[in-house]
Image (cartoon, helix red, strand yellow):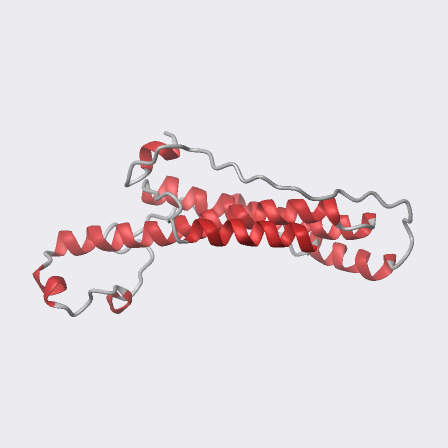
Length: 180
């Protein structure tokens, strides 16, 4: 089942195109500063994790509080409105709030994935590209883990919020302009 069918609210488009304009750098010097960057690259490779095997996806989540978060974190907790909610309504609220928050993390991680991929294009040396590529892989794992959690465990997702969208766009644009 697609993400569009899991969205709790309707959206008009499933794609968001952000125009980008930056230079891609090829560098023909392969030895300058190599040892320090290769050490980082090796460290990055050795410390990678696999979302498929590292997380036990067979575990069930509590349907009333999937992340087992305290109710005190819910903005209406303790209010007259909160007190009027039934147990099933509170459970539904928890599930939706947690899915909304995880969805925003997911969208932010996709922005980070795009930014790090662009950095690979911009950094000058091959070894810097190697290390930056480990960061791309790390962001890809974050996207994978959040996406699986929302699809497989929550069966619910939310589109990017109007307030997060400009922040993600600004970060992507400034990261590619700065080359960092």
